[in-house]
Image (cartoon, rainbow, N blue to C red; front, side):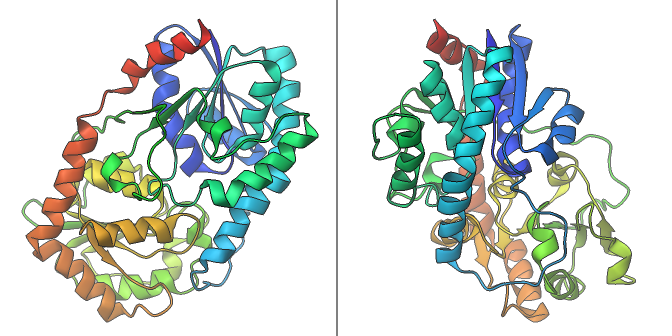
Length: 377
């Protein structure tokens, strides 16, 4: 079986597909990925064949000022950016790619509607993999009409309630109880668990018996964060814990000046190498960062900036998983108090542990392979 994995955007759309791709490759199937051109080297570094398709949607690396959260703006970015402008280009590129790579099955991230349309045009089944934890951004009332505009260009009948995306099989790595109850999983959904590694080589910053906090703003929003790093670092200086901070490959840790001994700054550290040693996480609320914290049962402080992060922050508050701060108004003292609170108060850790236990009870990626094989048969 030849399986083409497709994703629109950056790492947050790519990484949830990787465990499924590895499981299929281990079962003997031929795998390739297609995504925006800037992601091709990253996919190849992960060990997969990669083809460019569509425009670059991820950040261009330019530093930008921090903007207040605007949910209407984020809705428009998804509807007009990912669907109206990008889906037609990605549909055409995937149709052309399929002429010579000839997949039997497409596995698409939930925001990548162009390849889903290409699969329908080719008469191929496709799988939708959820990459947004709360499920409140990619929603029918926002994207249905825009998707139908693209479908009409290809001579396809209109769809409603994301029927195209959900028609065959939907795979979700997120705990079901985290999803916004206004947007329940479709009947075709199955949950799977992305295994998390245990502790490996003990990092040199780890201090036995001392709490450890991980702080990240991801790989896209870190360059759009204005003075947020500076404010959070000032707050973490006053927290009685080892604090591990990653600023991203496009920022230089040295620009933030000397730090006290308990703060450790790096451009990039694999999340799987850090989280097993942590007691709490401070993040922008991106779904990948959030899932990593949940998988390790970590309470969190969330500073939503855009995309699906505000929706994820809503669920963090509603489920008692941690504290949510406003990125514009949060002071160093607010950060200090929020981080100290999630470290100190056991209710946050208990709520995170419940979701960790929920998600680790799901089947591993290997168990999804027969489901995918069945779609082709």
